[in-house]
Image: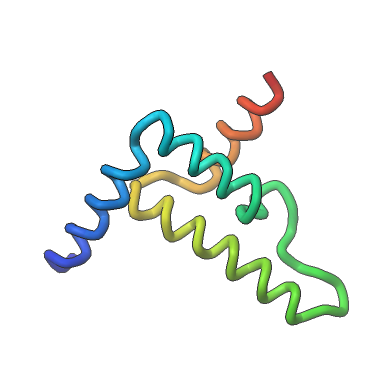
Length: 82
């Protein structure tokens, strides 16, 4: 991993590891994560690609934070139900 990548990852961690940062992550998952549903839209490849692009951004952010998307989404949905 390059020094530039490590620095970028530290920016993400510093910005999103606080309680407010966790709220931002949960909001992004709610709005763009598509973890609780499919990104596929029948007969609409453009919308499918758009949805997958949104999900991909969230996965990228979570990877910078060294968090598994499925675990973060599970925690979010469990928290939402309580």
